[in-house]
Length: 391
Image 1: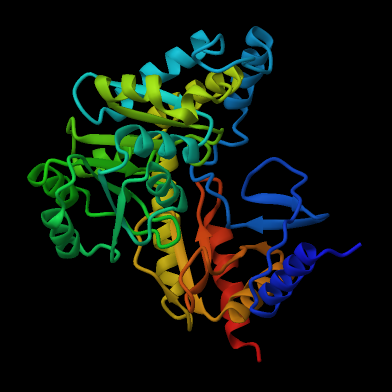
Image 2: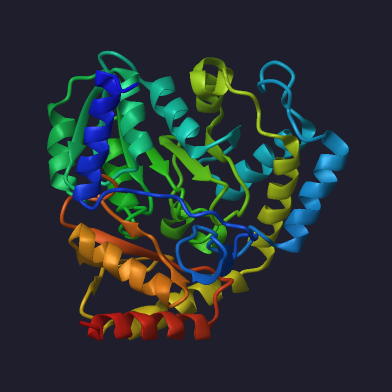
């Protein structure tokens, strides 16, 4: 039976298909890495956030196995009931010390970066307050601002003068400036020193989502260390499923902020804790981030090799020194065609289209990993050049 509601959904699906916006999932049958088995095909993969190649690192896997043997496979309850294990506590201490957004910082673990950002924004502001966000911020920062019921103002990407004007005009008792540290679809780095200066001048918090900088920039400590920043005004969020290779997220900030989130943030209070075996794996991952800088050095070399070779391609590579190298194609159908052409040649890079990116800016979000080789980059550049020359 077809109802009016189902018919409406069907019309929406058909419209997305016609606009080149339909998405479908591919199924991976192998561990994450530079080479994957996907839908029965062996492909070279340039679409993962596993920047340091730790997702299938044997020492991290062994730590997870040891953690499962010691603690089991589930936490059983929220952190505030009976789900906070010794492994969680140890990881929080190590993360706070490693990132160090301010003196004597504490940290709080979350099951996902989305939950962490919801906790920060809704925990620090509400009705009558004000949130200011870059227009290219991740969706979870936008959703958090809306859920907080604070006044939400967005400024053009990187437009500090516009943000300054918004802050100066606000009479809100509490203000939050929220920004991605590394913008996930463009790969550029936010001007954090200037944003911190504005936060100081306007008595605001600075919320930094370092999902794509943690483990990679600042010798692995993240984007704050990249700029040499530390302040009690900074509330730092890092994810643990990208460069760290596992899952989850954390917030690091002044102890008073962390206690406020622990006591009041609904996405923390009412969520079952992540399995402690993941905390064991993450402690091993963090040890490798600290002790193996050669992973970051290899990643930087691969990015430089790609950017040099991509200069002759007809598509523009957006300015980025990070592992995220967006190849701007433009039209949705054209981006899908390039992605399909790569797939036919044994390479997998999904096309990124609206609403993830603005209309007319569909792209291939090419991401590099320390697990890639120079030969892998050469193969990618050769395939892109061949597609560019094909009719």
